[in-house]
Length: 380
Image (cartoon, rainbow, N blue to C red; front, side, top):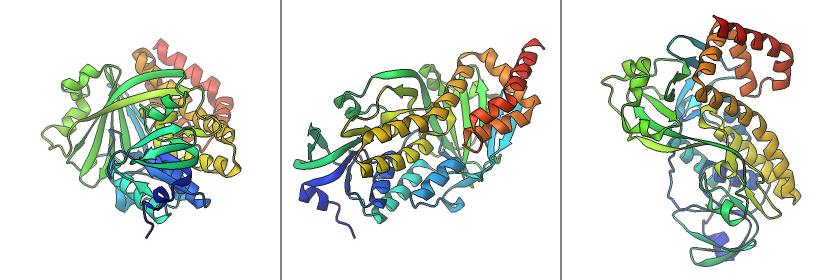
């Protein structure tokens, strides 16, 4: 068994990671797969929760397999694709590259923490770190030296501010609220319901449980019955007992100007993020983890910065599109009307979203047709 205090007692490590959520642990696992020493410091104890939708799409599951973690249906509940609904139309599409799995966030964090332990990652839970300079920090009162520092400390990252990497290139902020309901999933899809105040999406996470998330630009909606604006979901859940308290959080579509300098890198939400409605936040973090480990192995964090831009390009584009649909309801109505009339377009867009088809290929083949269909939908 790896002693979690060994690295701290030695007083040095190759990489100090501040933040032991999925992104920080994934980075540590990827580093250990290359034989690179690291130390993870996390202020909370396991398992760490977050108010997210808890759906892992096929690309996220593939990225976890690259890290040596195989999530199965026994860990949660399978779903086959995505369904969009509004008051007038609906459309669904299946994933072209396998099934997704809904997993409770605490369960997922526990599985990743177990994999980190198996990989030999020392983790200091319920611990504190105070940065001294770019090469050293006090961790629980003892000095630890390091070659690289990784900020995996979330949306309000202290490492980002300390390192001077907080300049935002583009940002929009919404608010998410999550609750679990004790009911068998009624759909084989993650359902995204669009309404005037925002979106409700429903993810199956167990044979007797669904995860319901409400995302809005106006946080005041959470203080009332937000399901009243989504009658189809409200009817399903009427009288159903809840399995968790309402949990809130920020859903930020944030792109930073820089995510790394010579010795410090940001990962996960600390490095910017697509809006939660894309469902790609965790998949992005896992891909970043592999790229970060490659860059540390090569001794050049600029390689990570370039990979980070490449990894985030498509999720941020899809995030911008869906947040635009939220901001302009007329655009949302036309888009879902068009997609419901031509579900093959939605199928191809989902293929793009999960990386099974390139955006360029879709735009060349279908861009004009989709644009024309959108125009027709606005005329009738």
